[in-house]
Length: 235
Image (cartoon, rainbow, N blue to C red):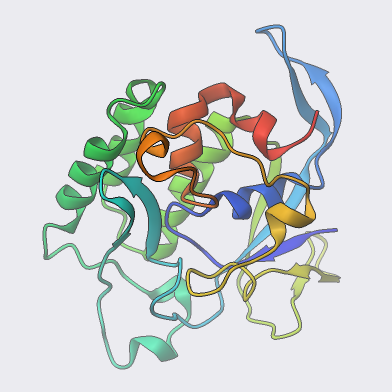
């Protein structure tokens, strides 16, 4: 079943676990492992909804030396931002938040096993400074999908539907599993529990504070690298 998500900045692990749920079929990888490819999951990102503050749309949670911290960035408020579709919302680069985020990410993950393998490409995407919030988030989403090895048919839904109904590629209505209100920084979700994925992986600061679940996907990728897919999908 196709799934419908809000756009998100460095989305949490549960966001990607939900995307990976419907992948099925195995194909061989050149490195000798296996990857999902015969049946990709179909994922829609809602580009027609109105912007909402204090959500994952422009914030994320990560593991720093002082414990779990949040990063967020400003958007340009023009004529009532909260009444505009998310596809029209522009990122505010007038403050040095981008540099601050990069420094925070480096400080948190520079000693993780795989950070150096992904750092340059990830920061290059951020430094391109896409004008729209949706474009920034989509570029990051595609980056993590590729690096983890997920096979996802990623689409955007340009018209808002409170019922979670989108237009399929042939224009017919398609009912999605609606996760737009499920994944939110202010509310716990049960996605990892429901998928039997409540399991720890190595985290840089876990010896000090213990394992912290459902942080940004960068926490999983920087610590587990190519094995991230093994956490998100039972093989």
